[in-house]
Length: 112
Length: 112
DNA sequence: GAAACACTTCGCTATATGGTGAAGTATAAA
DNA sequence: TTTATACTTCACCATATAGCGAAGTGTTTC
Image (cartoon, protein in one colour):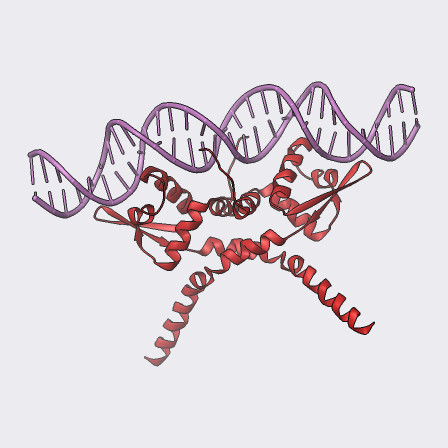
């Protein structure tokens, strides 16, 4: 398989593909600077598990960790999401197409 | 690890996390109804490899395959992307925040 | 200084992913 | 009716991922 080098986009989408990680991002969106244990508390996994997820998120550039004393504060950094969305925007015409067809049908129907 | 059941969102983001699959979606966005071999031609993988990628994409609901005769035409169906984008939109304020700060700085600077 | 705390790192396990060649299944062409 | 075409499925390999408990590191607290 070799896995030469995953691109930034690969890492971003892969990071978003896990519900635990999406939950972390959501919580940080509500309240920035939460500690690792605060993030872990409502989750059903141990600290080592969360640490790995945070590694994936920071490799993707989606969070930053700043250690003060013995606690680590986690912050959102949504830049890569912006790029992921830019990629998706190209398909916008595609998911609005069905709506367009509906509109066309209704208009045509009104004239019959 | 158990992998109880991946959600639709999980599958969508996971499907988007691979460059081969993003390439397939891009090509289909330009030209719908391409066959499997047409999609495979510019890629450096064998047909079985592409078949697997297409399986991932259709499990995620991003493409549909329709067989006529012995060729299979592949079509985009971007609905799940719409949902993925809706998820990402929540973070929009976050990646525009730096721009807001810049604006604030410039305005403040102008008054000094 | 000892003990508790907040993580992180280290094996370890099980499953998923991405690729292959070979064989299987229809359909189309000779 | 054989043969080629267009895939798909199968068996297999190597690596990645997600989880765990146990041990390690640095920082407070007692």
